[in-house]
Every structure is written in C-alpha cells, then in structure tokens.
Length: 228
Image (cartoon, rainbow, N blue to C red; front, side, top):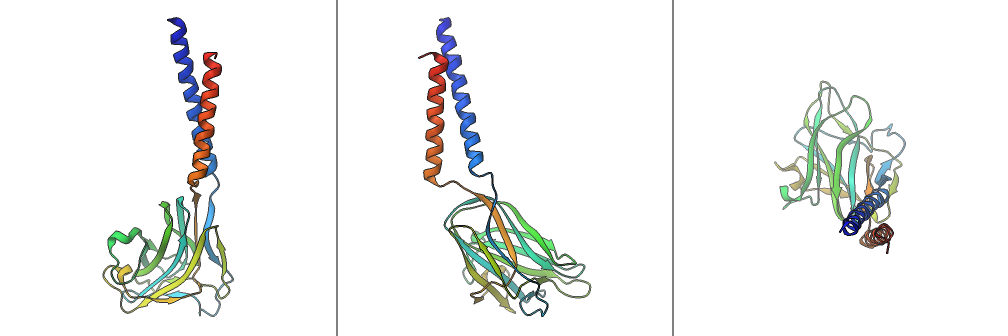
C-alpha cells in the first residue's frame, strides 16, 4: 500500500514537471515580439504626403494582410496636432458600404500629440490570419487647427514573413455615422507612418512538436520516479 501511494505521488510529480515544461516551452516560442508591419521614413517637409484631418469630413486608413496569427498586438500611429484636437481609431476586417459593427475588432479615442509622435492607439490585441484596416478620423478641433496623420515621401516598409501591405485609403466629405462603412478611394503605396508589433503564434505543427516533446518528458520523468 505504501509503495502504491509513493508511486502515485511520484506520478503526480512527474505530471507537474511535464506541465511546467510545456508552459515554459510555449512561453519560449512567443517570447520575442516582432514587427508585423511598419512604415517609416524621412520627415515630410513639404507636407505633401501627410494626411490632414478635419471634423466630420475626413477619414484616413491603411491595411495589411497576414496569413499567420499574432497575440499581444500593439498598434502605433505617427500623429501630430494642436492642443485639444481629438480623434478615433478603428481596427476592422472590412471597410466600405455594407461594413457593420460586426466587422470591428476594436476602436479607441485619443488626443493628438502636440509634436510628431508614434502614438500607441491599440495594445494587447489577438489577431488571427486575415486582412485588417486601421482607420483614423478627427472628432474635435484643436485650439489652432486640426490633427495630422504623419507621412513620409520615401516610405521604408518592414514586413514580417506572411504579411503583405495593401496600401492606404481615404474618404472625404462622405463619412457615415459608422465611419468604416464610408466609401473609400485607394492608393497602392502607403505614405502614412505606423507600426504594428506582436508575438507570433506557433503554427499547429510547432505546437504539436511542443506537446509531443512535453509528453515524452512526462513519461520519462514518471518512469524514473516510479522506478520502472
């Protein structure tokens, strides 16, 4: 009886060890945060490539497609504006007529910074494979003017594997009550500056290898503890 109890205790210890190993391996697989997509470059001194905004009339956006999933996704936009200027950012899976709140991943209100800043607007998102649209509109004027989505005349595009850029979008004077449902024009080059980072989610094959390796570790540890 004592031997049976000792065996059970040892078996539980082995399972605990294996579970710890699985957690550690899973954490290691996504420890390093990477850039999904980033657009940066020299300042737009001529103001030809920035996106000017105005209350009620302008809506600007960018888009990307990923065939991989990411967790803890953070999104920052290069913004500038006047004191008191505020805006709303949207992240959706669709834009244009027919878009509904069901296509919205997240939305948030923000204040335009007084100097050009890569301002965080979304944090901690989990995004699967798919196409995403990042939109910005202005909701209140500043003391001396409007907000700006900063752009660059020579965009430097950084992409993670399996991520592609889809260009930029704009809607003027026809913004709907649900802004992402507005009609948009499309450009094939992205001049607006922004950055999206996240933790790559292991592919199913990688996850299976982690589980298999953890299972073997549990089995071996348990054999040693029980004395087989």
